[in-house]
Length: 369
Ligand code: GDP
Image 1 (spheres, rainbow, N blue to C red):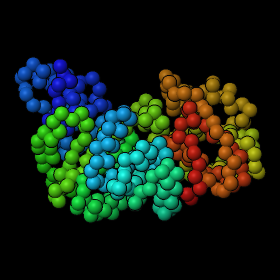
Image 2: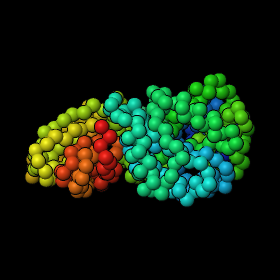
Image 3: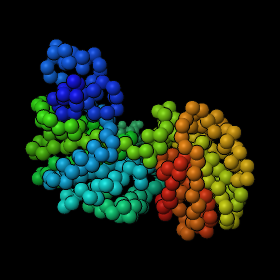
Image 4: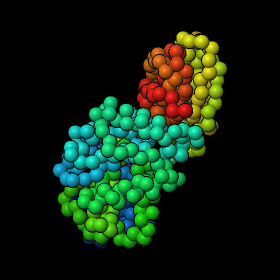
């Protein structure tokens, strides 16, 4: 029966099972609608947006997201893919390429505040463009921002103002990239936005998207975050995620290494130095992350013995997959990426093997610093 009752703000079917999913309403409130005490109701997300001007994250699985992309493809729109600069390849939405069509498409790289202070923004953008192109995505522009610190927001807002004169702006992103934080920051900058949701605009639609009206008659549309199991964020429990996620700009820690040495990034990453001269590797990770150096020949045993304890996060009850490695022959000075956790800068001419749980989020790029 509850499937028939929809939020009058976003049109999502109301449910009280999962706070993370569209249409959530506490059971007691849903019961009032079901037994006829109230006839119209907002889901918790629309309620918070309406009363506190605050967007709460919700998520969709891939199939529902594809349906949503189809609706975007039919309209003239500016599509904004918000990505996490610390988990970039996993937060780019490759399926967008089929739907962007003739629409404009931009990338917004979030969490810039975490990059080491001396990072060059032009180098970060070059890397993002190359990776996007490799996935068949051709962004018209790239912005680097920090939604949390409101860094570079003005430039983005100016761009959105200009481009929303004749079209709506759709924000899309995988979960945890900071899309809600960004939209809240934009709402904040827009000043006094009252009654963001006033009527039922989506009778009968199951797509939970929220439209924020602009002065020019167009809308900023927030779409639900897409869940992907390629993100460490969706595999770690919240406490471990909090421990692993950097909060402040990454500071380098340099280690002098010889082939036969291994370094662990707590229990979430490992790098073996296989071939090359005595040299230094520079680690950029969350400040509290436990770094352990050992001999490669002892590393497997060490990990088995200490993961979940000394090598933590993950915690003792984690169900992360075992570490899986990939070998890289480093042709030029490169950052070896451990998505969501950090990166290690390795000089040219080294052969290394990098590992993450299940091989999630491994990659390299030309060194940024
Ligand atoms: P959403 O799932 O994309 O809507 O993401 P949220 O807005 O809920 O943010 C996900 C996580 O990223 C939260 O822990 C935020 O505090 C964090 N976050 C968001 N924006 C930033 C940022 O600019 N810098 C940093 N360091 N963290 C951010």
